Image 1: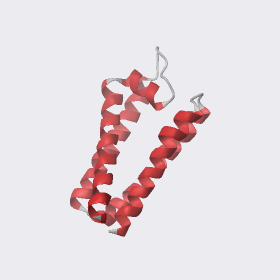
Image 2: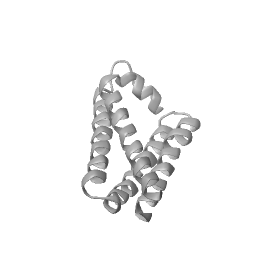
Image 3: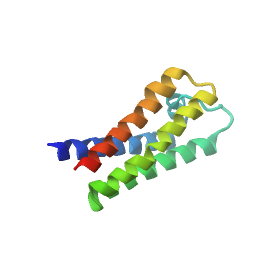
Image 4: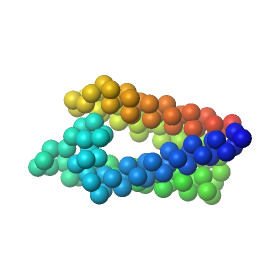
Length: 123
């Protein structure tokens, strides 16, 4: 049962980050608004593309580790990957985003990713 929960949560989180990355590539302005730091109408194209590629790459890497390297390697990946939403929390706070978005979206995501890492280490 624990194995199913650990893998299920990790797959779900990685699929969600793939979708977020794809959204930044396909609908960048809407994705930036959801991130908590809206993009300027006349700029920020590089930031939006980098964010999309980063998230897409992390999600695919996480899925590959789950499929080919197992729970322990995926747990280490999730532990390290939790730094991204923690950093996103700081970015949103420092650049005019709301505390609700910073903590309710990004910090909560970091905590969920850390829980996922702990579950993967436990199996």
